[in-house]
Image (cartoon, rainbow, N blue to C red; front, side, top):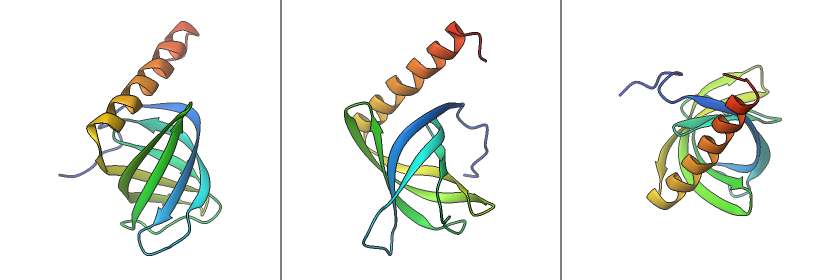
Length: 112
């Protein structure tokens, strides 16, 4: 299956997160600038190459969720686009509630 940017809508967010390349032992702290059910854009000091496998930790308020993913885009050594490749159904439900709440808040503020 080919991943497309429009596969899942993303919403603007500032979500603290840790990102660890599959071959690394120490996670890198970063922020998810946009997030959706299929992945996120991550602002990070040193980006990973496209197709690199990563482990992702996202903080949704007080809830910590874990996912595995792959880097699908790398922009100017500042932003990585990540596609989630594995996330538990429980963590997926937390992510969905979070994204839905941001989309609802955006509609209330007139942001589409």
